[in-house]
Length: 216
Image (cartoon, rainbow, N blue to C red; front, side, top):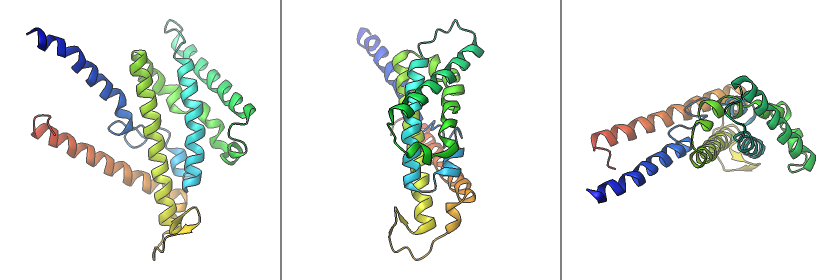
């Protein structure tokens, strides 16, 4: 009896950790939640563009959320959200001043300043991240950002290959290409296709787990 009770906390902690890391796949912000889809649709039409965006996005978002997490919950909700964007603006300005990304920020165009008000900072922070204990919160933030980054890069790679037959100017001898995937239409189509496939995989995995009593 005592041994069973001793194991209960660790099992609960394992479940909480798994849920916190769900942003990588089962609760991927982009593919499942449709969060911050515009950059994936309009800008991530090549691997280079995708990597450029996610690096800048990750730096601003992670630093902003970590700093913002120290704002007391006693502060009025509206004021907290305003403070989050002010913090993000400060992080954005600091990164620009330090020249961490050089001229890459200019190449991002309008998507660079829009990072300041991305949904991770202005909505998911309150709805999801900051409702958890600090360790679980940090795990969830890291997993969600990593999951989002991976999805954007995947979309960028696939769009570039389908549109041009290669990546980074290297052609792979693909006999048939669809240049439309390099445009907005292709971005919407690719995002929808990958999101649908992801949901299908998750649904089938859960059905399999249920059929086998949660054992895979």
